Length: 308
Image 1 (tube, one colour):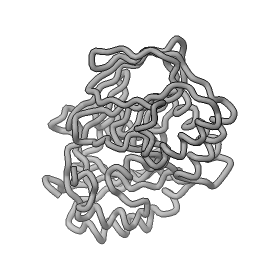
Image 2 (spheres, rainbow, N blue to C red; image 1 turned 180 degrees about the vertical axis):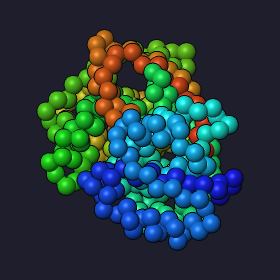
Image 3 (cartoon, rainbow, N blue to C red; image 1 turned 120 degrees about the horizontal axis):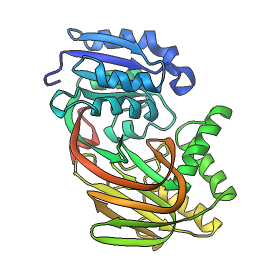
């Protein structure tokens, strides 16, 4: 891996319902075997704030986060606070419930296999999203999308479901219980779209929610954000659209609209649920842009990122 001599492996011990703590010793052994000759450091995160601090201060050429999307999101806040020419490279060993950014990078959800793949990894410059001064790696969404993300947090605590099963369960519950649209104005590419929107996602990568392909053409190296939005529909059509969205075959349906943007603003009449990389937020005004090639990432040599 080009220009990399030191690696910090940062483990969230509570990710994956404690998977981080359970596999830490075995993972360290695998890293030492596969990355012989590198200066390796192993660190456990203590909190969201600690992850951000590590991203900002840890002295290593490469930071590898062993976690889900949420803690990776936190670490990258710190990494992105550094000047571009001194930012460490980044990668992830996915052990969370969604793992959408790892999916985009082509990193498998088996920790030991992921270590082996990264040992022969390739360095790529990736775009990063920015919303209201918060960086995001994969996904930003509003309304029902964000409500579903919030529901997954509840279900994760009460069930053992992960990935698509977890998100699908949360999505069905949200659609049946609270299929609410939000009036908004989307300003992008010199036009304003005003309507009652049920879905609005602004994607750097293709998927959210553990594999739902909301923006199948999104690429993290094209300098663009992919926007997908839809107006309100009744409950039964919404459930049908959910199945189409999972497969990434929804874009030709009349209810959906798509766009590619470099920046946009979104204004709601009142504060609404939002999420970036699965982390829930609330707000009414959002300024969004893409930062092309802002973060170097290490991907497997067979990653879809390398296929353009």
